Length: 159
Image (cartoon, rainbow, N blue to C red):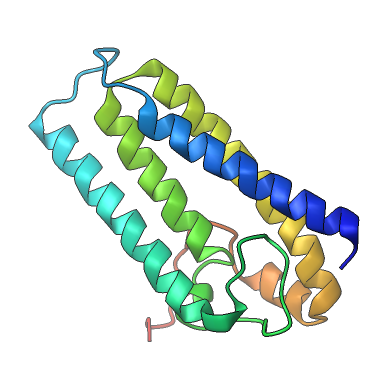
């Protein structure tokens, strides 16, 4: 991996931290109603997203890196949560973001959330280029597995 790729990887990390911190610092507002059922849904999404992030991190083990660059311990994961989506950690973070935005009732949080979704898409695309370089079989995996949102698997029972 080149020094430029390392710098780009760390830039992604910095922007991600900035977006998530900004989202968490946005105060609650009254831009949309947040009745108890919305608050409950937001809590479920936030907690569910956190659980997916933690499970994904543990599953990656020593291959987990701060940057979107595969390290020496990396292998292509196609089982567990990776069976359903190529980036389960990003999926979990996006679900968490939706929960935080719903709870906030704040238009600013909605805008930050939308920017965060676009950001994770761009980060995933960049990361996938590195994964294609590292793992020749990544193309087939990517063709069969959605990036962030799982889809029904044509009649196969979930294992």
